[in-house]
Length: 605
Image 1 (cartoon, rainbow, N blue to C red):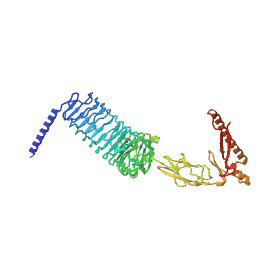
Image 2: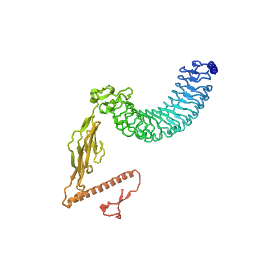
Image 3: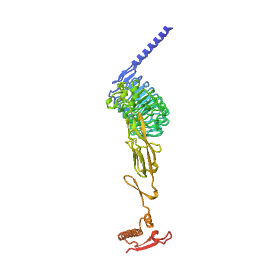
Image 4: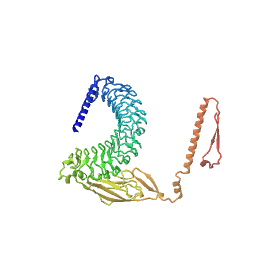
C-alpha cells in the first residue's frame, strides 16, 4: 500500500515538473525586461520605457513597470494578462488612466500607482477589478474623489490615498468598498472630516489621517464606523479641540493623537472608549494628567505621552486601571512620579521616565526599589537634583545610598504666630503663611466657606504663600485655613478675619488707587444745609444755565437761515416766509401736556 502511494506521489511530481517546464517554455520575455520563469515574474523597472512593452507573456503573475516614463494607460491596456496578480506602475509620470484601463485583470490582487501625476480618477477607471485586495494611489496630485469612483472593487481591503491634494471627497465616493478594512488619507487639503463618505465603510477597522489642517474635531466625526478599531490622527498642527462627542459610537482599541496642538488630555472625548487599550498623545503641549479622569477606560494598558510639556501627573491619575502595564512619559518636564499615581505598581511592567529633570527624593524611592523588575526599555532615568547625584542613573545607586539621597523632610509652616485681624469695611488685609520642607511644599488656602482659593480674584492666594483680601467686605468674615504639604507630610494654621460694616445712609464711597475709602458726613443742624446737600445747584445757577442754552438754540437757528438765504440766491425764486412752531419746556412755561404752542414767523428779505 505504501509503495502504491509513493508511486502515486511520484507520478504527481513528474506531472508538476512537466507543467512547470511547459510554462517556462511558454514564458517569453520582452526586450529591456528581466524575466523569472520560475515565479512567472517580469521586471521592467527603471528601463526608460515610454509605454507598456509588447510581447508580455500571457501567464505572467507579477509585472513591475515602476520607475519609467509612462504617461498614459490606455483602455484595456492589459486585457490579455488574465493571470496577472501584482501590477506596479509606481514612479512614472502617468497623468491619465482611461476608463476600463484594467478591464480583464480578473485575478489582480495588488495594484500600485504610487508617485505619479494623476489629478483625477474618472468613474469606471477601476472597472473589472473585482478581486483586487490592495490599491496604492498615494503621492499623486488627485484633487477629488467622485461618486462611485471605487464601486467595482467589492473585495478591496486596503486603500492608500495619502499624499494627494484632495480638497473634496464626495459622499458616495466609497460606495462599493464593502470589504475595505484599512484606509490611509495623508497630507490632503481637506478642511473637514468627510463623515458622510466614511460612513459607507461599514467594515473599516483602521483609519489613518495624517498631516491635515483641521482645527476642531466635531461631534460624530466618525459616525457609522462601528467596526473601527484603530484611529490614527497624526501631525495636525492646527488641532486644538476635540468636541466631547467627537469619538462617540466608536469601539476603538487603539487611538493615536500625536503632533497636534492639544493643551490638555481630552477626557470628555475619551470617556466613551471603554474598549481602548492603547492611547498615544505624544508631542502635544499637555501640561498635566489630572486625577480620577481616566477611570472609565477600564481596559487601558498603555499610555504614551512623549515630548510634551508635562509638569505633573496627579495622584490617582490611573486609579481604577487594573490592566495598566506601560507608561511612557519620556522627554517631558516632570520632576517626580509618585507611587499613588497608579492603581497598583505591582502590575506595571514598563516605565519610561528618561529625559525628565527628576528630583531624586523619597517620591521616587518606589522606582529605585523596583529597578530590577521594571523595564525601562533600555533607557534609564537619571537624577537632576540634588547636585551631588546629577545625571546619575537609577540603576547605579547602591542600597547604602538610598536612605541618604532618597529622603524627604516634612512640610512645616515657619511663622505660627496668631494672625487675627479686625478691620472696617474696605480695608486691605494680608496674612502670611511661609513654609519649609524637602521637597518644597505646596501651600493652599481654604476660605471661610471651605473652598480652595485661587491666585485670581479679590480674595487670592499669592505665589509666596500669603493670602490677600482686597477691599474687605462684611461677608469675608470668618476663619481661613492655610495648609503646606509635601510627600513627607503637611502642616496647617488658621487665621481669623472680622470685618465691621459702616452705616450705608451716612457714608459716601470713593475709589482710590490704593483702597476703598469710607468718608462719613457730619450731622447737619439746619435745613439749608440739608437742602444744599439734596440740590447741589442754587436758583441763580439754574437761570444762567437755562438762558445760555436758549441763546445757543437761537444762534443755531439764525445761522441756518443765513445759510438758506445765501443758498437761495443761487437757486432762483423760492418762498421767503417760514413758520416755526416752538414748544417751550414744561419747567419753563409751567404748563402740562395741554399748554399752548408758541409760534414764530420769520420772513427772509
